[in-house]
Length: 302
Image (cartoon, rainbow, N blue to C red; front, side, top):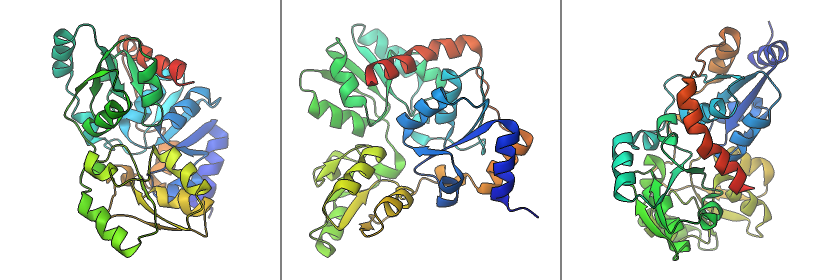
């Protein structure tokens, strides 16, 4: 009998499908994926892919974004309940209230948001392009949602802007405290601290480098350091060790694991391809309303 990997490869060819996976997916998913990357890269690949079927190994907002950008493609999410708690924190009624309260503000949403939230926003951003895009916006007032930590980090880099910060957060990054970093620094004093901007401000104060998952990988590859303290979801370890096998990477305790990202198994991917299961469907009017902020992201992010 053929292995699961072989069956997946055969089905991909038969059905003209492509597999996209986020860096936070487990190693076996990253190994079978055609493209592995952070949110911005994957949204780009979903838009540019020529295949008719996209199997998105990530969480729901990522698969929704792919469908918004490519309505003619069939987008499959291998695990239907793979969600994002931070995305769920963005409440459409609260956003409508903020828009009334700050009518001149640009409404900027993190890509970690639902299609309903994107439909209310002017531009979408990822952690890799948020700073560049917000600096390009003509508005001085910025409503940024839903991540308060990323918002505070960007606000610190843009003193010319006034930020209205929404109180959401990533449950994985937000649980890391300064003492978790100091414990590692005592053990590994020469290891630079590399952190994701979804971390708390007090944690980022320890960082030698702050960046998205993709930028963390680039930094780790080019750094002269043979060891590093990595403050983001542990799924990135797979890519770090692949590109830099002679370097050592330490992650904080408690473990930085996104349970939703880890829900997807190789069996789920096979099942999604076999049955074309868990197709993402978005009502066309809602999709069109949400499309503009993603198009603006790709326009301003280039």
